[in-house]
Amino acid sequence: MLLLAMLTAALPAEASNVDDRISIAIQSTKTLMIRPLEPNERDILSVYQLIYEPLIRINDNYLPESCLCETWEPTGNGKTWTFHLRSGITFSDGTPLTAKDVVATAQYILDRARDEATVQKGFYQNLRYFVKSISAKDELTVQVKADRSYYGILYAMTFPILPADRINQDNPPGTGPYMITSFEPGNHIYLDYNPLWWKNAPQVKHVNFFCYPTPQKAMEKYEYANVDAVFTRSVAAAQYKNGTSSVSLDYRTSQLEVLILNESYAKLKSVNVRKAIRAAVNPDKIASSVYLGMVTRTDFPTIPGTWMYPDSFSSVFVTNAAEARRLMEEDGWGDSNEDGIWDKLTEDGTELLEMNLNLYVYEEPDNDVRIEAANLIKDQLDAVGFNVTVIVDTYTGMQDRLTHSSGNCHLVLCSFSMDVCPDPGFLLTRGNTGNYGRYKSAQMDDLVKELRTCATKDAYQSKLMQIWALFVQDCPLICLYYRGGTVLSRLMYTTVRDIREYELMRGIEEFKP
Image (cartoon, rainbow, N blue to C red; front, side):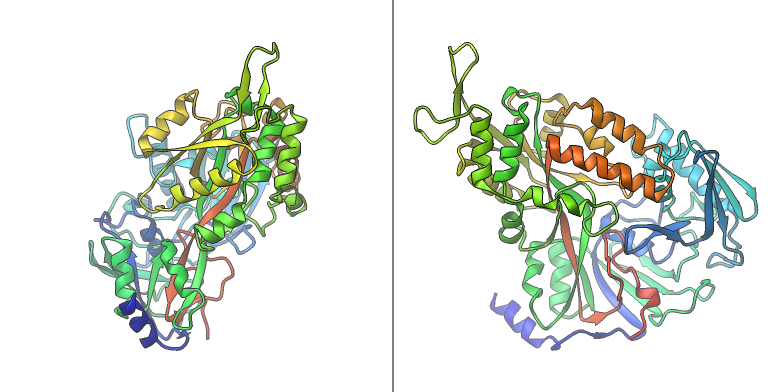
């Protein structure tokens, strides 16, 4: 701690604006080749973001905006989408960008995702759920056919575009602001400005990434001032938030932490019991005391502060111990033996049921505080009359437990990696991949089906709000927060509002001090 204090004291009083270069420490040991369609490390995606560009980007308001395509329009009731590419764009080697490159890139992703013999289906495999077929109508026109009208298809068109003849090759050229000039696996990736980029030249001409085997090693290099910036998801980075030595660029990950309520367990079938649990749990306290604020609080499986988040329902999710007790009493629970645990007689009056719940939790290499969060949830529930036992499982054990719905798996603290498309159906429809709580609602099933026939933003938003209203009413699961991370930097390199996982250098190409 003394060493850290000395290092911190030696740092400049505040971050200065970047000049023409910046160096960043990242964690990378597995990237042996530059394969932008098959990334196998989180930090590497933020490197690729600077080299390769998609048809469509997601802006600060989480809405689709044009990138390599200039315009697009749906036809045939939204089952066909036509994308018009910008003219005059070339890859960094001078090869012109054409519709054939877009089609070839998408087809490579689709073929890999649809191949039953392929285990690793690729980072962009969800494209198969959106695109039925894709074709080039002319040099600058791409046509996409889908099984249904669906606004969400625009979010799927955010994969990087590669030259058609080099998709399966190492280090293909991109159309982005930078290109790789030197790559040594496990050591460094050096980027220089791409002089053929189709926008104005960025101020930062050189971006150098240095690779380290662990997050701790990367942080150490930052602390010793060997690099200008570091990517980190460690809660230890919170110590820098209020300091004057670094600028802290907080970002939201795609990792949504939730408390699953297993409705196949008889005591959790009652919506009153589920709502009582929701009223007793205090996510804000967990966020501040366990994660030290390095999370983005959310009550729904969509991103707060965006067009898809129902702010009007936020008052429903206020932590209230008295309300939790009222809901339990309304459901017929009491404490007949005065042991502090909710109980009630079975309908035939022959057995006294107690509200004993098992809370399962597992650890991940990049989340070493989840068990602490589970214990805090236990304390919060115990305080209002539940009797919770925390059980720690392995990641693979938990996968098996969730898949097969073990009878004593009552509550589960876990996370979902949310797709770029704002579609909660996989969590909420019966029989779906993420519906581990066995929630069943014909009304919810219908709403999700209808959502997936909305071809405009307004229609999509309206249907999402109906889904969230039912979500509030039924309480199928409890959303807690999106895990967060921080880019610690001595140099200010961006002014964009929404720094997000996989795009941690977002805005550097347009930064002007």
